Image (cartoon, rainbow, N blue to C red; front, side, top):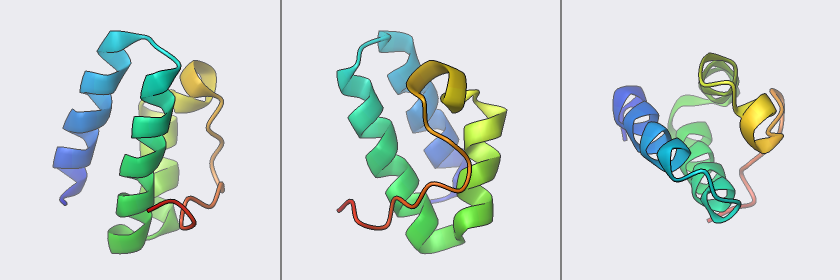
Length: 66
C-alpha cells in the first residue's frame, strides 16, 4: 500500500465519524507501519489530525494489529 492510498483510505474513514472507524484507521496504520515504518505512521497521524479525532498518538505501535 502506498502512503497516498493509505491517506485516501483514512480520509474515507474520517467521513463516517464513527467510533468503529477508529479500528479501521488503526488497521491501516498497522499496514503503513509494516511497509513504511514508524515515521510514516507519525506523519499521517499529524497530517490528518488523528490524535484529535481518534486519540491516536504519534509514536504508538500498531504492529500488533493484523
